[in-house]
Length: 250
Length: 307
Ligand SMILES: Nc1ncnc2c1ncn2[C@@H]1O[C@H](COP(=O)(O)OP(=O)(O)OP(=O)(O)O)[C@@H](O)[C@H]1O
Ligand SMILES: [Mg+2]
Image (cartoon, rainbow over all chains, first blue to last red; front, side, top):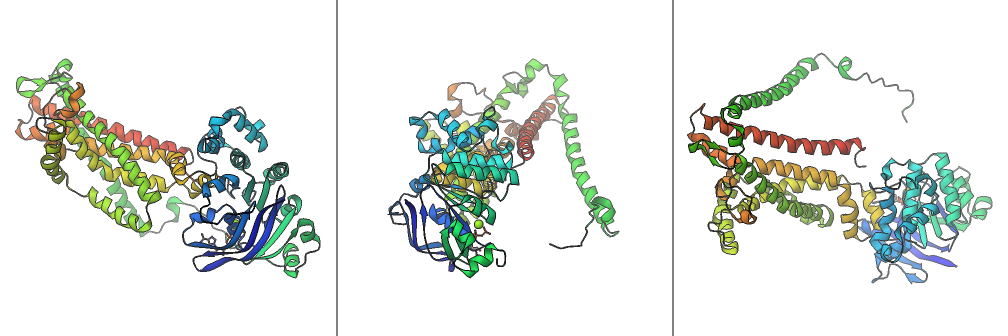
């Protein structure tokens, strides 16, 4: 099942084009990885999918992005609703300077879910879903900033899944973490795949190869190649892709 | 990466040049003399004010009546007068100040911000006597007409003027506090599907709360020490403000008392010592307020601050 379909997307910061004619589709309950050198537009592309670029002044979007067949840039689209469906985890763990409990409860409270569902249950399920429950169940009232970075990042994932999005975008979620915490997040991605569609940006080629089903290779604002991960890493169609994944370019 | 360059930072004294020695010495002397002056002022205050505490029985000193001509030095009405005016002023200024800071920092388009910020600074520069004059001739009549207070010179009138004076401080300190809240918190809020409004009130403002508390403390420090405007608009009746209508009755603050009576007392008299005694109380009060503000900052820093 196709979740996102992107059709000839162009993106501009002022007059500078950051994305040029991108077309691809994201499959439901699969992990799509975006790779490419620094500054090639991976984050920009990711932020187009939940319209977080709207918060940056002077930016412009051209082309279409369909979520379940509906154009998310059409006028009249409720951006707040869109972001509830498309959650996001950032590069640096950014829990709010509040308790662990309040962090996870933030989304449900803001959306009024706590009126219809049992909040403690949402919180436990979300923390379990993010593989953090066992580590924090006895100190939910503690300041979130007292957690280790890896735990903070899993808390951010818990916070995101607490509102039951359909898609989770992750922008280099492991780049601030040590190898063990990275491994935990990667395992977590595999288990999240059962319920969510994941789009991740990564600098780490092995990570893309290990966890993803689909891989897109970006180069200077263009999508050079997009295919099944196995194919990209074994028989890429483009010379540039091969040079990049073997470390000869980039 | 600059390879091969080894920088040994010895820090402190060993690394400086001989030309810096006299400069550093001068700065040090200036720095310490500031502390010295503050100490001297405090000692002077103690010397002139402390005698009152044994010249007059405590019951009288903390009594409810301030009639120096009859040897009644009850400071309670003045103390409560100051506190009531200040607290009312802060209750008015806090919501206004925080709302303005949020508007300027979070919501206003760039060009509005460019106009508002200098205007707020100009506001801070208006001399208090001008505000007092304005209060007497415009605000007081309004209060008289709306609330039926006989002269319109009331606690509430004073609080309005004081709130106005504390606003620039509160706005700019609160705005700085909002400014230190990292963009990543805002992004996280918005990406969760919170509206901009929810993100501001549930994420940004709570994250800035220690800075906002500091803004309140500084505004309060400014308000409680203010003299001229308060003397002009509060009516100056040394009345114990304990009834429900006290807000719309005159009151007298500690500062106004000192300013109004200092000119006519004989140096060294009991009345003279009493006025300095009030000065000591005022000093202690402002000191406590500043201490609270400082400890708020300290707590923030110890928590690792705001990233
Ligand atoms: N807010 C911005 N304003 C202007 N230009 C920007 C902005 N953000 C990114 N860019 C530019 O857009 C291009 C793509 O940036 P983007 O952050 O999407 O790259 P990236 O692939 O995510 O890089 P990295 O791997 O370093 O995160 C870069 O040339 C960058 O300089
Ligand atoms: Mg990036």
